[in-house]
Length: 330
Image (cartoon, rainbow, N blue to C red; front, top):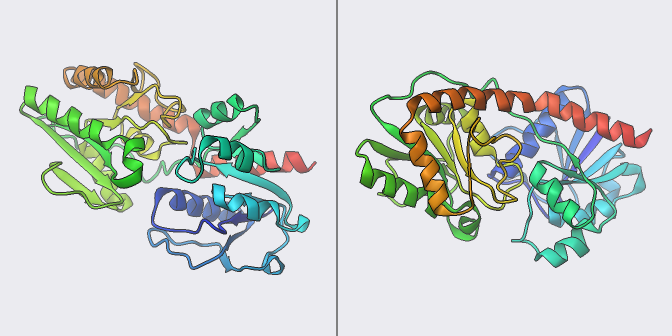
């Protein structure tokens, strides 16, 4: 199969969304498919090597014929829709509710109403599209199960909370403040509490006990295996990756029941962690519950890894994409 990832008006940068696309494209190519990344500018992503051909163009004549062309962000949809018919099925892989690009009404009229096959990466986004009467197919990217695993190296004398550090326009979505506030409150009650974080932006000193800026996969392996409970209070995600990554190392997660928490696909309340009500008091109560019960943390952690394994690795999920697209063209 020939597949085009349409990055025009979106681009590739150093962020989790770009990393997911690159790993998905690389996996598809390794599976034997012909994959191209169509872009309007230079590839600015430096975290991972793009193995697929990267074509920079402003002209449709330069785009190869294909079986599928897939918009990768809201601003690439118009380009995908206007691509020549020889580019194949026109799809949109929706991986977030991008209100930082358009308000909801415009998302519906400009993005969801566009004549594309709607692919979503999570249960939350599938439900959100259903609310607006749009059908969609869940295609998750899959996980690096061989890269992240339990090393049995957690320190029994320390209790380490983990969280994602975000600043700027995305902070209200990620709710970094909840993570920091929970840490400070728990530390005021118990002396052995620490907070370890990582993020794409630098964090001011004095907030956390350990911070990693754009960690490598090896650094993440160490980080997640040092954390006892991962905190995920986010309220506007597609498929939220860091909590699932923590779960791969047998670290339980405390999340929230917000419709777009990004954790509905793998976080099962009382099984792989706790799903709190969407308020800070409930969120903190579940964190403290896990602080007080080491055996519960251990049991939940093992089930957390098993839940992510059920979703599967990248090959399993990219096979689902190929099978679905082939079914549409038959």
